Image (tube, rainbow, N blue to C red; front, side, top):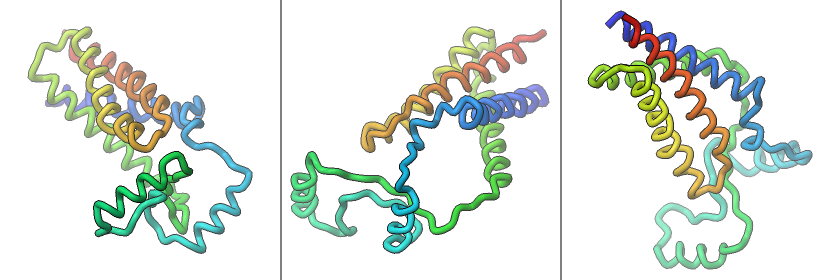
Length: 178
């Protein structure tokens, strides 16, 4: 168990550090955060018209009939649409979010290690398993969202492949030691 805990903490730190590099120094997520010089006017308008929450435009109120939904879909085809996540106040305290992110990374690597302990632990199979694990996580979350909301998920795919290749390499080496 001690070996699994060490593998999980170090693997979580590796994953966390990769995510830090990806979002900051390497700036791979820039395509997901486009800039507009009209951002202040947009934020002012949204602030006057929205409460905290997620919005999909155009849509209908909850409880609308199937006929109303079909009519809206036909009327909206080929026209602009938007997905908005609006918050009235930015939480600039990143410490708690970073701690939560690190703890989740450690937990996910622990779950991965727990799964691995039920099979052979040679370096190659561990690395391949980590890549498959990362790819499954990407496909079921980010890519599935991309299908519906047409978002750019290539940065998330890079994170899944590189992050889990690093974690798989670490765990393959760590568990493969005699």
